[in-house]
Image 1 (cartoon, rainbow, N blue to C red):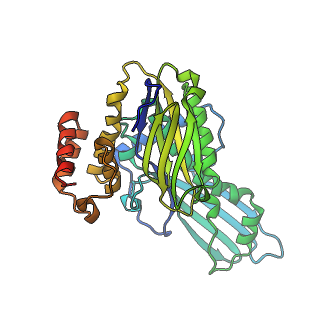
Image 2 (tube, rainbow, N blue to C red):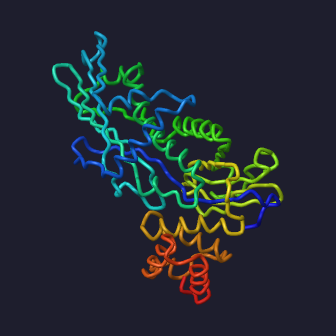
Image 3 (tube, rainbow, N blue to C red):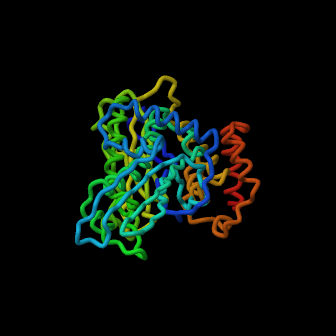
Length: 385
């Protein structure tokens, strides 16, 4: 990675956080959240409710944590059914690690979980929805500017609330959804697509929310969409922004990358340009990159050492099973300058387990940077990885 001519701008690449919605059966077993998860949710909710930046109203889903939200409406005389009633409650649940798919790090999930019955021409939806927050990810701020870390966590919560609120909005006011339910037969399913599982509405809403939160803190968020037809078989090499376009950071700053559907990233600055290279994970879907720019902080590490904060964060997440081997391999390439394909050990997935232990020691501060860097150089030189 080349250093920028604007040497005071610190480039910090951090692991992606993907935000998913899941649908489960109506009779899934509920597990209460841990005390850590409950404390995290209470703090994030308190901060979210104090936030005065403009955003979509999500009060219905928030209120459903305290008491059931009841929505009912009559059907037309020509419809199959006469009346529809929806009773919606939301509760915090223990984060379910089985919902984490390969190459994805989940910040949270919101689950629509409804039991639907049809009797005497009345349709009833009894929805016991669940919000889950991954405290292992949301409480891990290693290598991330504290302002960015707090903003991101608020964005995660807002994102999940939107999955609930958008579906509630449809139940309350969508003529199309109401018509379908009023004409539902007992064997037909309910349409939950209004919860926006593909994030078509949610991504721009959360981008706007993040931008306004960062602006309150004197920062910026730049959103970059990477369309499949603008890539070369999924690979892209693109300019994100010019550093000179942000004179407010002339005294230094930090850029943190978050992304969805992007892998094998190379992120850096050269000749006033911040660039991003990488590949789309799903080559038929767009990738999205959010660049958080924050101002210089007192005591900020010099650029020559600050990149190790990202490596240390990846090492800790990898050692504890929260990211896949490809992230660790990219970290090794970044530390050593190796640009080749996977080594034999990575290719077969047989990474010696003791390397995970050592990576975790480094993450926890039990060995210093130079010790871990020398170990990695040795492992690469001897083709162990």
